[in-house]
Length: 607
Figure 1: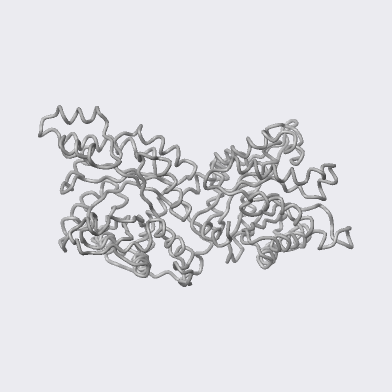
Figure 2: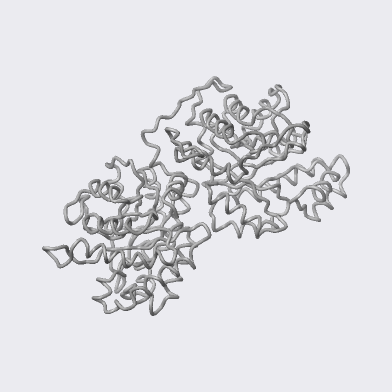
């Protein structure tokens, strides 16, 4: 992984790193563990723990090889297996990690002192780390993580060795005591600055201290850089022959949210963190964006009068982004008017607002027909009702320059949640002579916004500040070739997409394979629910609309209903789908039949 790609990643979302595998193996075996020997003798046990951490939600798996350098292996009479131990550790992680996950080779202290207090020179340190890291590089590590270092000199030499070999991302963690300094007396912030100066991409704290102690030190840091925080699960206590840690998963999850506010971009655990702890941390951080690059950046403040003459600011317009991925949202889709008459739309939204509408989905020139700008309408809706929008942006109508200008304008206006779409060809609409541009497709549009989120335009020119886009993409859960659909969706997610919207769903059991395939990516999914007007409309959708499959039983319900009952049956079916889909996903968005927007009120009135 390139360092620039890693920066995109940790700016757009918080990464969860696995717990201490050595500690977890000790907990399971209730015996002393020397990790390098266990990798040789019982690799299946190690692989099982790594898989459990990955399934719990760890984005980054750590190889657990802090004690697998030449100096320590020589003392434990396993030096001859140096390369095999490190190779096997990396391979086990790669077999366990999810499709979007990363594997970082772990390097730890040698336990040997520098001359004149010991026998090693700085070059000896560098050679030890060059030898170990070369194995990880040969077998495809995504990056490196330093763990357990209490000597700043040794950590610096490790970084120098790594930067002489590669340009992969490096997380450099050190261990500190209760006074916020290393056991050699180096202050925390001095250590972090030295590590950054020697090539670290992320710096942080590993072990020794519990969550609240670490938080008290993070509070004092200036934090112009991303942090990695891996506390112990409190202090260990011995119960019989077993060492255990008292911090519960719920407690460390609460602390993880504090670490996020302190500037942490990567959060996990050290000793005492089980897969249950990692799962709790991952759940608490899902959908959250890092704050490390935000402090001190100028933010345009736009004040506008709402329909109640209250003042709404850009801060108000970020509520949707904070809710996405943390609790299900409820959205409705309304097509922009073809002219300037918007009063009816505003009136409908005011009537729907008491039913807990979180957002309005606004298509952009659907079917290649000119309508009011989705971004302008999103801002107008927020001004009048206080409801945020998911504005659709397509690649059809603008070249690369205009697309970027439109997105910057959207962000300036407080429209931060965007659904990135390729768009229908211009020729299908009302203007046969109109041209389709398509400088990029939806994948490219996602990448543009992901780069803006780290303060760069598509050409990597500095924007002066970071945008805060929530980037949505579309998916068809009933695609004929689901493998191909997932490959295209994975490409968008890897470029920076943060949530997924589906086509309309009428049969929940049919989307289970899609949800199973998407589960490793841990992104919120907003399911589409389309209202059916009557039996004729149901037959049209089932036979002519790609990606829709209405259950035979529901088709039969429409067929057997009287004409005047079919409309109410459509309302009832939409209500049933909303109630079933909302709890099992990132939310739902409800689409009325064309020209039947008043149906929306019927869904909620008697629910």
